[in-house]
Structure formats: C-alpha cells, structure tokens
Length: 143
Length: 417
Image (cartoon, rainbow over all chains, first blue to last red):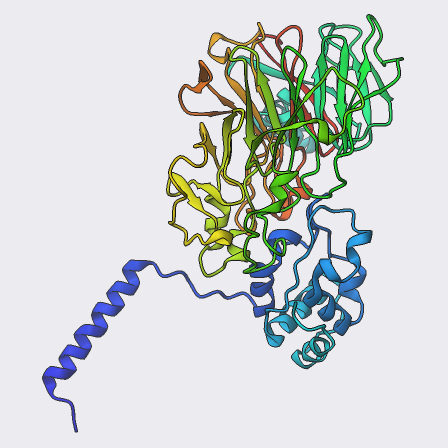
C-alpha cells in the first residue's frame, strides 16, 4: 500500500526534527582511529601510555620490548594470561600486575596486538584472529 | 657598502626581536621556570641524587633527602641557597625522612629506622637503629611514610597492596572481597612508640582504617592532630566500562584530605568520594551503581576533595616566619601528578596551598607552585621534566620542594632576590 501524503509529511517532519536534534546535541564525531589504536586506547593506554613507555615504578614499558617483537601467539597467550599466572611477576620491578585480558574477542585482541607490534615492536608481523584463537585453546580453564 | 648598510638595517630591525628573546629567556630561567605567587622566588638547591622522595631541613639548615638510590645530606656553606656539599650516606632506600629531637628518622618499604644527629655533624656518624621492621614486602603502595607527634608517637602509613580489594586486582569486572581481608594488615595508619627500638608490626596498633595509601601524612602541632591526603582508586572505566567512562575515571574519584582520628574509617575499598556528585558513593566492586551511597556516617567526609589522580605525595602545615600571614597554619600539598587520567590530559604536578583555620579549610585551595612538568611529550608522566614529591620548611621559613625525576631540590622564599 502506498503511504498517504499526510504520512509522508509526518515522516519528513520527523526526519527534520531528528536532524535538528542531532545538530543540537553535538553528537561526538565518529571515532576515526584504526580499530587497533582505538582498542589499545580503551584497554591498555592508561597503564602503558600512548607512547608505550609505561609509567616508572608503576607499569612497564612495552615499546621496544621482547614481547611486542617476538612470536605473535606467545604474545597473545601472555596478554590473555596476565601477570598473575604468567610467571612474569617474579622478575618484575614495577608495582602493578597486568590483569588477564581473556574477556576480549579474538578479533579485537588481534587488532590490539597487531597495533602494538606495528607501533612499538619495530613493525613486527601482524597477529590474526585465528592465531589468537589458537593461543586461547592452550589457556588453562578460566578460574 | 650596500652590504654594510643592509647589515645595519637588519640589526636595527632585529633589535626588538632580540630584546624580546632575551626577555623571554630571562622569564624562563627566572625561578627555574616555576610559576609562583607575586613576591616569591625559587633557587635550585641541588640536582642529581636520582629519584628524590621526601626531604627534611634541620634547625641549622642542613638538608636530608630520601631517594630510591639512598639518603643524602646537603649543606649550603655560603648562604646562597645552593648546596655546596652533597654527601650520600647509609643504606636506606625509601621515601620518608624526618627529624625528631636529635634523631633523623627514615624509612623504606619494610621498616622505620633512626640515626643520631650530633651537633655540627652533617652525615650521621652513629649507628642506624631499627624502630620498627618486618612490614611485609609489597610492590604496590609499599612506601612506609610516617609522622611523629611532639611526644615521639609514630604514625605509619601502611598502604594497601591493591587498587580496590578486588578478588583479582585490577581485573575487569572482578568484584570486591567482602569483607576486605587486606584491611587487617594494610590500608590504614598504625601507631607505635617511636622512641622504642626493635619493634615489629605486631607491636603497633591500628589507629585508623579505610586508607588506600596516605603517602602525604603529617602531624599538625598547632592542632595537636594527624592529617593526611589519600591517593584515591584507579581505573573505574577499564574495570567497569558499563558504569564509567574514561572521562569519569579521569575526574570523579577524589584525592581526599582528612583529619585522621583514632578509630576513624575513611572508606576504602567500599566507597570513594565522587567529585562530580559531591558525595561519597559505593564502589562498583561492592555493588555501587554510580549513585548508591554508603550508610550515612559510616565513613568520614573529606575536609577537601582534590581532583582525581593528582597523587598527593607530601603534606606540610606552614609555621615558618618567612611567608605572609595568610600562609600561617595553612597546608601545602605536593601533588606528584597523574598517570591514570590517560587518555585525558595528565594533571597535578604542582604544589597547592590550602588555607586553614583551627584545623579546618578556610577558603578554596590555590596553586602555589606550578610549571614542574614542562611540556610532557606524549602526555606521558615519564616525560615530565620534574615531579614534586616532598616538602619541608627551613629555619628561615623558606619552603623546600623535592623532585622525583632528577632529584632536584628548590628553595622557595618570600621577599628575597
């Protein structure tokens, strides 16, 4: 059934209201950052900082470190395991322990790991979602 | 000839610019680049003892600085404010250093110790004595800062080795341990007889609880009372993203300034003072929904709620003779500066003055000394030029400030050139 003229007017009026509301509400611009950078910002940046340099005595630098330059699957396993259970704690000289990030989806972790390897690991190879999934299979069952 | 003329014209044209540059350079170097209220000036006492922590100035003007590299003793032999003699000593790497009677009290992460201070002696020649030792080795919030009252009672800050007592520290969505077992041995102030030797933590008594980490702890002699500024919790947004945004995390949880009373409870880890709502709320780890309030009266309300993550690392009540009258009995607080505000711009990195009267705030706080951090590339605390960390007053009433990036020490005076 063809919509009546009145209904079309109502729809157009509604559309114009929506447009006005959008313009007035100053909706933030869509996040134009690449997904890896955006996800790093949401989950990693407050501790490891934008430049990957960490915070002295609090959280370690990741930039230029062996983790971001080494094997991608090992890195994925480490990030999903965290500092409590990975054995890294005993060698650490910083205050805070990294929590496990196994709650993140394979694809999101792959984006983050690819981003930090590219930016902080001297352009180390990307990590795929399939590699994260493979690393996840070797994790011990969730406590 | 034409070239000479051109050069003359050029030099004439450049003169105002050069004069401006000279003025600019002078403005930068004045007070070592720090911004201070009118009439105050700063000189660099020394730099180079590494990661400086707290400092104390003796009645004869000798300065003792704690650092991650150990203690050092500083003396200005010609009165220009600059230390001519800088001598590292001892084996204590820690944060606190204070003088009580003829003793230099110092601490590291596991104990409080003292050296005898003999007249005329810059570096203590006597043996280090242990006042309390045996605090558990921790990596988080481990500095055993302390205050001493006029009788030698020792109040030790025993920070909580945890952000918010989650079942898994700093893990997204992990709920709080209830009741929080950490509070049995940490997260409060423990009191000891500071004149007795070889005590263990078991010889102390828990004086106050619910204190995450009070690096800035001070005895106020005019009020005969203990005060502290407490480091608030981190990571509201990354731990509970459904409830808090990054902006919330950067702004809402106050750095709380309290009078610390015997038996007092200051709310950690069950609550925090929310700067946005202007009231105390239950933390998300313990069932908070961003608005839920704890039982009325259960936890103390701060005297002043400072901005989130500024990291209060020292507190001092001014009783010197150099500063104008409005500073008398007021509180200076050294804010070390934030890391957990990222990705929002970092903040803090300054010395703040809080006017006080009869132990209560008397008006709004004001920035006293700023400009420590510099441009701080990449918004990273690592790139801060300086980070204020310790405060002390010299015999002439000047305020001394220490830095943790390079171990710089400034003397800030009023009415001196």
